[in-house]
Image 1 (cartoon, rainbow, N blue to C red):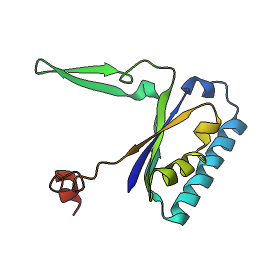
Image 2: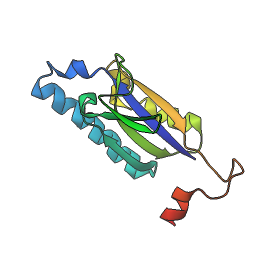
Image 3: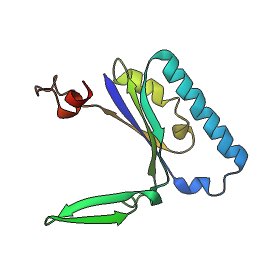
Length: 131
């Protein structure tokens, strides 16, 4: 079963971070990435550029409306994600406990990836394209 782990944190905490702070954080993420790969849980994952690099797209009355920045103004922003293959939610949560963001004041949202076949749908177009 695949789970998406969305990593949330306050981007402003990095404004005053020292190079040593940044390196320590990157080392922790690198160690987690290696462990995920070694155990076979790793499917995909990336860090994201800061939320001020985001563009939010909406369609209203058939007009495309672009807004600079994230969807909502919040104290926490999505900083990255992991897509993992896990037996169940408990295993996914055990990985969350190793994500540096949760130890640095952030949070991680864990969301199961839709299994279209189990939900009674035919193979999704995206899955067909990958096959």
